[in-house]
Image (cartoon, rainbow, N blue to C red; front, top):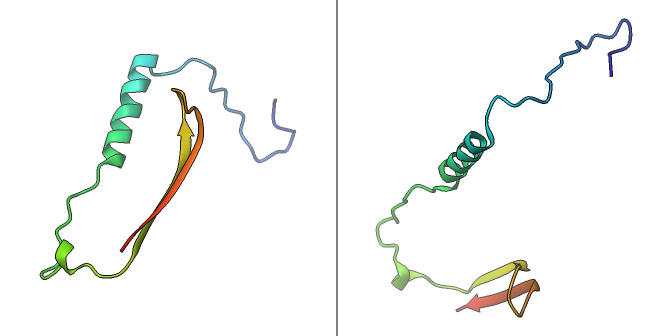
Length: 81
């Protein structure tokens, strides 16, 4: 749709042709996910270890099982003391 007369917007026809092939687009997507999904290794402070942990820690998760006999939504919670 063209911009109205006197509009400050510029019409740019980007078309439907992609610069990347589907294979190149997939490679760029996977590379981006790998780079963003990789966390650096962090070292614990001196005197901090599993033996010195104190308190209660909790975990919760939700999701969907996509296949198998238990297909459907799933959720769980847990506590570690």
